[in-house]
Length: 204
Image (cartoon, rainbow, N blue to C red; front, top):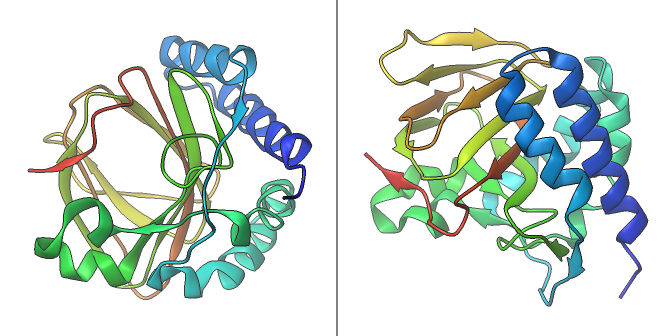
């Protein structure tokens, strides 16, 4: 197995720096980035795997570069084929057939196909395919989304649907319902969950 330690550490540090620079949700950012920087990461036993929405991966990395986030594209590119990707159907079961085709997630650090494990957080890329509807869902862990490519719409709690561009960072408090949808193009984001990360997400 390739020694991925340096590549993973680079991605995590890059994300921590970008979260802090965004200037939003300062207290949760401080909690998340402290975990990302201080907790040791340990190699995990996992097998690489793909999900249907991974067909958009190369396109989305090119868009990530084109939309001003080339540092993230460079950090993610060598990791993609080494991760254990899961589909939305893997997370939510047969009632989420559309999500099996349109949503793919993999940890870089964490329990869901990650190269490494760490206590208290996990982080990795999530792919939303075109014409995806990710229904309201929630989880006990707090969560940040950092958008890398594409333009989707997002809803938190009872708030109105909001379009967010690449470079946006936004926060979901523990157990806050949130949803996402896309139009004609795929979307790539980096997701960091922290706190109570052992409980899986649940569709509402």
